[in-house]
Length: 277
Image 1: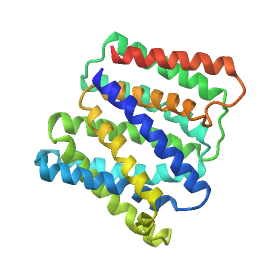
Image 2 (image 1 turned 30 degrees about the vertical axis):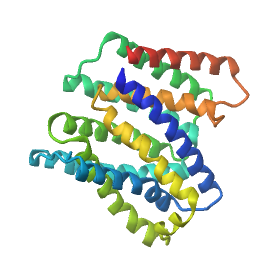
Image 3 (image 1 turned 90 degrees about the vertical axis):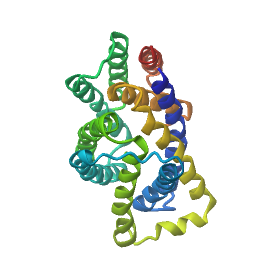
């Protein structure tokens, strides 16, 4: 239950950050890679600070093969996700990402994680409601393969992360290493491919705010996976994200299909409640 509550709060701050990011990209205030650096920098520094001041850097050399594979996959996932943001239709991207949930559920079962009948029912209801919701938005082919690739890769990266923090490393150590690896990838892409200096954007208050606001969901999400199976946490996160997007009046809910949208909302709320039991 605690992990579900954490993710529910986390998705609220993600919605704030995403809304600001989409506005900035639409107005061409910043490039994709510089935006990713802005969103990642403060989080990385916070995790480094946690390791220094609370001495939470617990790292097992036995995890090197797993964390190395995860690092490679995270870099690929970051690149594909950024490209998908630029090319894929939002409703298409959201629809295809539903595939992550049943795939992750199968992985959880194979790894021996315990999922009770209420949580299983909750995941099923959430998958059905999101499938129903996005099916009424229509699916566009442009960028669909990118969204599909991110959905499949996310299963691998989340599963490897959950396995590492369960058997080998502390959350702070695992995430510090991974955020540094991703920054090492993003910085050259911003400087040399996008021809931007991502650090120059920190002169503007809006980007400083955005970097700091991203600390909250990144921190909460990182620790949420320590409290429940990955499939439960991901289902809670995805469904909560849809709920918050409804509140902010984003693309998921336009003026058409009001009855279907109301039914989906009720199903999502019911699914989240079952996950928390």
